[in-house]
Image (cartoon, rainbow, N blue to C red; front, side):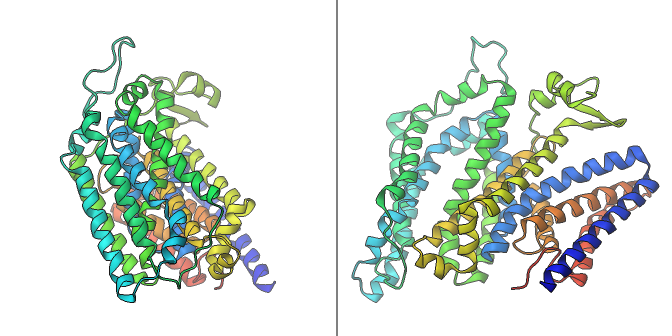
Length: 498
């Protein structure tokens, strides 16, 4: 009770100090510069939160230090840009992702039977290694002579349609079905082999409750149906998407990036993170190596160049600034007048996106049964397993949700930041600083810490430019804030005692 009272007093003191600082900045900076810089700070803070929210879930709840989180932010930007510009690559690769995911997510169905097998200790040790090798070989066969580079280059084709009756020519680089069908099949086999390897056949020390088969079949059936549909529509779907309204296409690009983050996060957690939970330092090395691999693959697919994603029509009309939100929604103006300050409307959308995601995470973690299971599974996994809940599935869900939030941040940043293989590095560092300032595992702390860092960086940049100082001073301001917070509250602003 005393600790809670102290936390409340500290929070009130912090709010009062922040208000005093803002009033002082307003007096020194002036109204116009203060409003513009504050809005810029809120935009940065929103992006920092989208990265930090995923890190808070993964690092704060699961104790997994994911050094590939920035790479996943960058992948979200590339996936969204590809879908919005020309989705041929997305629909060409979708069957591969769904095939591997389908094989992997059969784990709950097969694991109880694999554990029950009577295998010698030597075979239990060596069989997973052999299965990993066979899975890799099956994946190599699946991608043998597959023109991935040709698919990736389709985003360079102009994605405009001047005549609805004359669809874009030569936007598709899809392989004929006669040669293509073997690829998803081999990836399903690869995923199934990985599922068997991760399940550790014959190891009876594991806990695997035999849940109702219908419950475990829902997700695999959904993935299987999605896989069949993705194979059938992979040639026509890109043209259908490109003929859509730009705003709808942008909304779908956000959905595509988030769904990619969920599937990619689940695959990474099951195949790479799960076998290393007992060796945390190996997870650090593995995710660090994964970040380099992702970066090199992106450079191979799209070259080490910077691309710019065009803004959807809702944020693209150049001319007179809108004077209200209603006028902006009617005209699609690229700017809006806020108390005499002309500010890009897309950046207001990014601020709104961060606020909506904060509300979503808060409701998920505090008001839903899933949030209760996640918190309980992290705090006492043995007790939760004794209740018949698969804790490993909970961890997969948490990791996938964290990666999805990072991917959402990437596509949110894509229309106003250059898309390049290094774009995730800066945001990953700021995400780690945000998590440390806010406190491990506290999504409220991540939100507050992101706002603090965003404002500090925006005002730091403003005064560095005004006083002709080095930009490095503004960059160092976030680290200085972290040091001050840790000196006063070593667990962060909202950190709790273990």
